[in-house]
Amino acid sequence: MSLPGRLVELPQGRMFVHQEGQGPPLVLLHGFLVSHFYFRPILEELARHFEVFALDLIGQGESDHPSPDRFSYRLPALADAVTACLDALSLPRVRLFGHSMGGAVALTLAARHPDRVHRLLLEDAAVYPLPLPLSAKLALVPGIGPILFKRLYSRADLARHFRSVYQNPSLATDELIDYYWERFNRAGARDACYALLRTLASMPEQNGDIGRVQCPLLIAWGAEDQTTPVELGRRLANELPSARFEVIPGCAHSPHEERPQELLATVLPFLLDRAN
Image 1: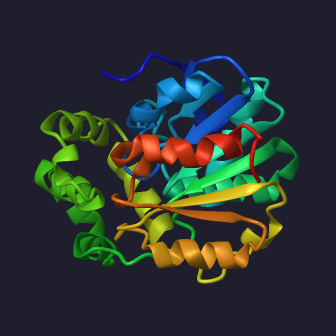
Image 2: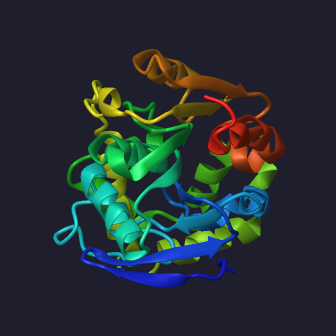
């Protein structure tokens, strides 16, 4: 059910890459508990204009799940792994599109490797402390939390999570939940996801990388997002005065799935260098 792709050998582990289209390179970075797979609603149109590389971050999807003892799963480590993948793919400079946690990874990469990013698109990016749901708070309780997440977290829990991120919960179909549930239960995946959850839960109040971004930047946000509320998008735009900030109506945390045509109409001119 995954899109076709290949595993790229990196020092950090193997990273899955789905590649399609022709044109300037555009790299897509996904969020927590998902993979390249959820970019499907916009891939066909993006591939008309770009050579699209949709990656699975280390620890998720089809990529390897190294032990947290061997890979930290912090933002700099995740950004370094993406940079290593760009090197392996012979991509010296790219357009970079990051959603949710992938947005935080994309921002980190753009700040620390400014020569590698031509344009940066952040969609509902998780770059500040988030209003965590009760299930996440319980999972972070010392001692009992790791047991709850690594041993007792169920398919029903995952389904509740996905239904909470959409304005229209019916988008979280049984087929979609089964797809991510199977990957969540692969060898090493729960340990990796728990380390990623800890990264999300420890986002700094003041992110020093934000002021280091030099490339043109567009910030797009779902108007009804409760996972990363739109106020956080406005704050990010205020801290990046040169950035454009656009709110996509009628959707929550995942505009590219809930309102793909509206999102594309907003972001394509920017990615094509037709707008600042």
